[in-house]
Each structure stands twice: as C-alpha cells, then as structure tokens.
Image (cartoon, rainbow, N blue to C red; front, side, top):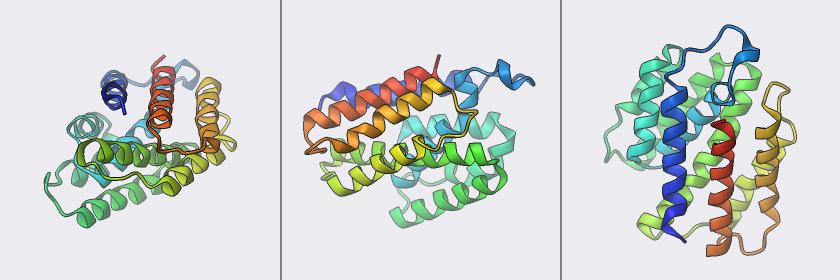
Length: 202
C-alpha cells in the first residue's frame, strides 16, 4: 500500500476538524457548512479509531472536540485521558462507553452520522494496523464494514448534504470489488475516504 494513502486520510481528517471544531455554529441550520453539519460523523470516526488503537493525530482531533464542543466534553474526557499503552480491551470498553453515552443524547440524524463514522473509523484502524504492525486485514470484516456503510447511505436522513451522501454511496459500491484487501483495492478505499473528507470540508 502506498504510504501517502494513510497519511492523506490522517492529514485530511485533522485539517477538516481543526477548522470546523473551532467555528461557532450559526443559529440558522441552513447557514451551516458541510463541515459543521457533519461534526458527529468526524467525531465518531476519531472516537472509533481511538477505541481500536492509539493514534496521535486522531487523539489531537478528539481533544479539539472535547475542549471546544461542551455538549460532548464529559463523554469524551475519559477517552482523551486514556493511557497510550492501556490494554486493548480496556481501550475498547472506554470508547464504547463514550459512544453509547453520546448516542443517548443525540438526535436521530446525529446518531446516524455516528454509526457511519464508527464504520469508517474501524476501516481506518484495520488499514493503519496493517501498515504499522503488519497485521493482516480480514477481508470478510472489511467487506462487512463497507456493506454496512452502503446500507446506511441508502437510508440517509434528509438533512445530510446530498453530495456527502453521494460519496458515501460511491464508497459503498467498493463492497463488490474482488480481493478487497489487495494493494490496489486498499488504495481505492483510502482514496475514496479522502474524497469523502474533501467533500465534507467544502
């Protein structure tokens, strides 16, 4: 897999969030940018990644959310404060507790965003672990995650930007690729995620 693919996801995610998390949301929902509308997705993606593994850039992103989005602050605090070398099962448990607490206080559309963000976070963690730990990517798990995203994209709430939904659907079509874990297809997956993040950042 090309080095720039994973790096581009991390940088793209960080740049998107570091701008949007600092923007005061307008009262008029019609005035919201895609970035502002998709904050629960981005937050959930980073939260999911940190539940799977330590990642400095996603920790930095989630810290921005925790400090600047008071509505999510208490739930995210235990995740931010996790020790870098905490046991995997404890890491997962802390992240899942935060995820459940956040979903309980969000509306239906934001919960949908969290679900889809969680899937992207899981995919990111698979690819990242493969890169830094040479951990084999389970093709069935990867296919399941992409299929799940495809199903969610076809049931997107009406307030989700149409161009973002289109990108989610496009990503979902990757589920039909043979040999999903080949270098060629992993590159397609990462490029598609970068395209999604770029669409959200506009």
